[in-house]
Length: 111
Image (tube, rainbow, N blue to C red; front, side, top):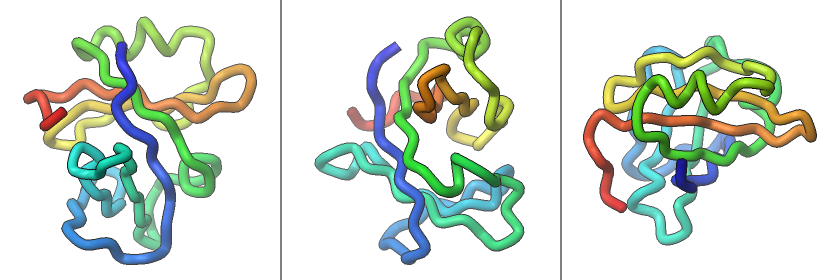
């Protein structure tokens, strides 16, 4: 597992957003940001609620889908792994309150 990005919720539309149908959220490409920031703008009817919609998260890249379930053991599931098209991602909360995304990319994004 390696650091991939930090995700920050926003209400402001950002240039070059990508829509993720599964969560009804607009995201920017953290791999094109000099500090690996991913902005997340939620549709009003997005099923994502709570900490993921209100607080930042730290994203970690994993080598395969199975690592998501292995590495998430002992954490509280905030959003079960879902297919975002370009990746599979699951969101979790650590015992001390950090929001974590474990993401497996189908193809390696620009690093």
